[in-house]
Image 1 (cartoon, one colour):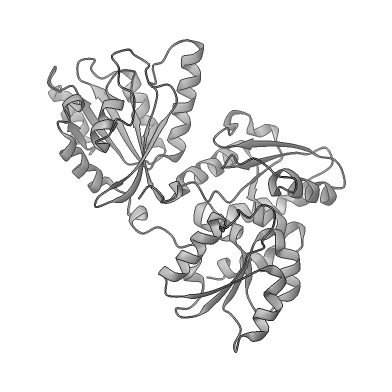
Image 2: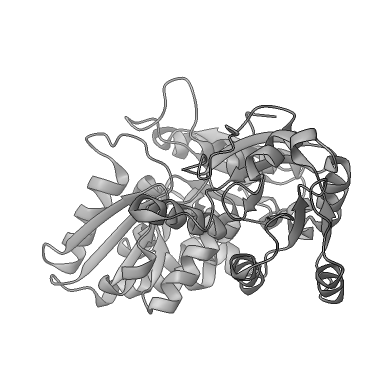
Length: 402
């Protein structure tokens, strides 16, 4: 199931000190040489991702990380990359070398996972060389922290670890929140408005559109897919109004002018504000656009790292709308991928995020939490556009009325 988008995979992070066997454990779990293994401490530098099908759980994404005890200026950067992985981890594997014992590093990793309410498993590796201390096993049992023993280099203990992983899977992953199917009655129709412009990949639809179509089909709902310039004709041909119209946010203005007020209207991006994040907090963030002045600073964040085109939504269209709305130049910065400035968020007045269709919900919620701690409002593309067009209440009504 390699084609399964990362956002739908259970993210399993491997954490620990250098050379405790994280990479060997990943290779044993995946039955592949996914990570380079060496006796040299610090072999793993950047996080290594391995998607696979882990039955009976389904699609997962293992993330091998650098050791949290890495040294030097480069080591510090590697540790920072490791810390970022906590934001998207849904199950944490704390790998412990029994020959090294338990230290403050393990305590800090455990505290970080517990602080984030991330289910976790302690994996004692190299148990052929040293036994697990009885007092440590008793401590973990008393805290109800699951643990397993392994010799990753010989693939020993992998079966028990797989069984423990299955028992630790969060209920929310087995029943992920729908994108749209719960917003319309079974057997009813949604019209999806899909503009074909320069950003539409040739021969394909973009991922949020594909995921929404699949969600509707899985929920036994119908969908009609049309381009924005064919919407009026499509609505006229229907013998009854659709239960919902979903549009690309960039076409919000023209679609809102066509769809009668009696028909609920929203956008793909607004739907993903609920499915990936917190629709209430991100709606409030959109309303904070009213407080922007020409001296305000706005951070625009995208989860993917595509090369922006001439009319790119994040680098061109939204900045132009913001400057027009605020009546001035504003200061707008951009970050992509996982380069999110968690330590300096207070320097911005607003964060506007993409729909995060490539990510799991935990990572998006982590970004929202970082913004909340910094006292900075956060919204996403669709909600921001809807607010600036004066149709925010209409755009969120199909979700908030549920």
